[in-house]
Length: 506
Image 1: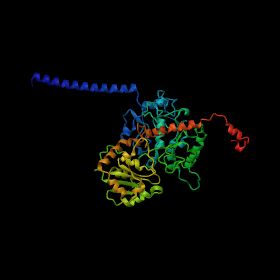
Image 2 (image 1 turned 45 degrees about the vertical axis):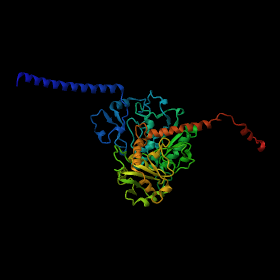
Image 3 (image 1 turned 90 degrees about the vertical axis):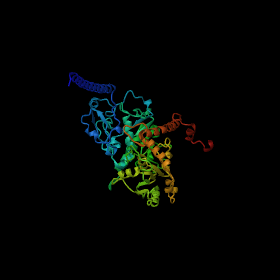
Image 4 (image 1 turned 90 degrees about the horizontal axis):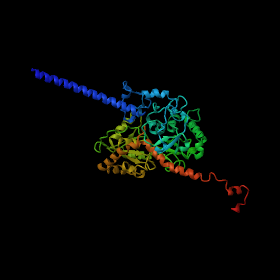
């Protein structure tokens, strides 16, 4: 090899090493610059939990700068945790003036920036997170939502967990830098509030504490309702409005059976009106909220009309009381149809897994009235992108002032559905093009029925708050009208009648 060739090869080696060194230093400088930018701008105390992988990854991040402070949420929610910076944990332990045990109110937050200003009672923890076996420390009755979320029981409990999500959202509204849509903010002065929130986990109380014992006359659920009525009616806020500006969640249809007749002036958040008299609840006064679906959302759904072999799907309890007779009639008329799945099913024995597979492989999913007009099945169908067929004449639907359900659901009256061959012929008449249009619409609207923490713009939590805000003006109108003569002296008519004025005088 000549001297020239050796020099050329040597130059190439030096050039490669220089290039590698330059690229390495550039990468290091880039990473360090981003680190200092993040340090200078501050980090949010919350990380979007819905972007975290649904895996065991969180428990293996040993070298990460972040640590998992809590892994309390029940497995049905997925593997989620509130992540906080280790430095934030140290700073928090030194902070003595934080509101609600670590929940900070930002001085930069303006109440006018939010759609709804909420005053929430500091009810004893036995009414809310204490029902989740959460033990309070210190004087605060609330968990520190920056770091710890008490676990919520899975199974059928989840479908009525609305009280849990809304209370968390109110608490999160006080956390500095928490990612949140500007919908609700907690205020400390009730005179500033649009609505007074009652944080009673009524559905959870019913599910956990409504079983009676042989020698006990009252269940714990009944006792809690009695204590709630006594507490509320003694508060100045209740006395001032008669409860008209109060908000109570009673999503399980049996959750407030003992107290509802005494608290009826309040706005209720319900699943439907099935077990309530119209004098207690109605569409003008109250809010319908979606169930939390038990079937997981169908992410990356690449199915189509032809790839879903089952035409019509139903799995659940067949023999029901009240309006459930339609289920029985349809079972006998549809069970032998070759492309129809109509069978008994429950949450037991992998029931949710089977229902997930069944709904995702079906074009249409039946939602038939049972003991009450509504059921979680509708929202499982929406999450599965299986076009719902609603046969429930008395059903009330959440957010119907915003959503046109006819764009992604099929409605059939009960009297028609039970006619021989009517339903199956009607469903078969819906062609591929029409079904695909509804299927695409389901994917557009499904986020309205998702419960998230932290809440997201346009999710179920935010939609419920917006529905509540729509009731506020009517509540204020009633309250203002009732105060017209609050400062007037006793009428002359009333005074004269008290001194035995002759009946024909007036």
